[in-house]
Amino acid sequence: MKDRSRIISLTVNNLSFRESLGEVSRKGLAHQQGFVCFANVHMTIEARNDPAFGRLLEKAMLILPDGKPLAMACKWLYHKKQERVAGMDFMPAIFEQANAFKGKIFLYGSTDEVLQKITEKARTQYPNAEIVGSISPPFRQLEEAELKSHVDLINASGAHFVLVSLGCPKQEKWMAANYHSINAILLGLGGAFPVMAGVQKRSPKWMQDWSLEWLYRLAQQPGRMFKRYLYTNTLFIGNLTKELVSRKLLGKR
Image (cartoon, rainbow, N blue to C red):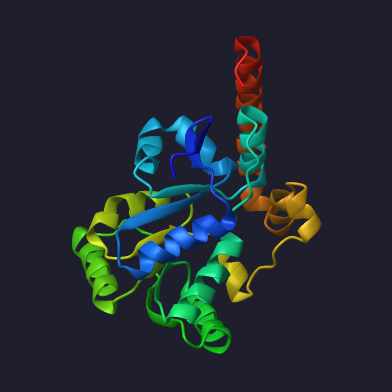
């Protein structure tokens, strides 16, 4: 796990999807502590603009290239062939692992409707994977006693994996603040929740392959996503270009 690549503001682990899944499954089923981030352009720019957030991410057990642009940046900057490890693919894969090894899953975040739909789907498709609890926390700032009660509930459930959907950067900050107190692996899966629940559709495979998944999400939620994508995509391209030029001038490979 020493092979990593620095992409603008994040240090991404250079692991295949299979290697990542194996590492997370092994540690989760052993009730080890840690959290996993699925990094995309948005998270990269959040960490660039907020160094304190970037330092929190350094505590992660793994930072995986959720976005195709990050996987491609590994090749462009370091000549490393990096597979995309998308959270939307990782979530059903974790359910498959839990189904195979009778693992326990706790759902944290999103809405009650989404959590209910995921639970119903899991009962049918992954009968040996036990969803041992779920919490849809309010959007307001939680009090210390509420946070503690949530952590206590998760630990009491015996969960091996805690799937978290609070949105970036909130979910990463929650995981970084609480992973030392939870006897499970935490995975920040954000937008994978509504897709698995069937509330939202995922982009076609060709759009995923051409790094256009963001465009599909923009078409689904233009009012919410337009400013974010215009801002973060522009900054990402600008910063990545700067790094590429700098490495070329310095003769780095």
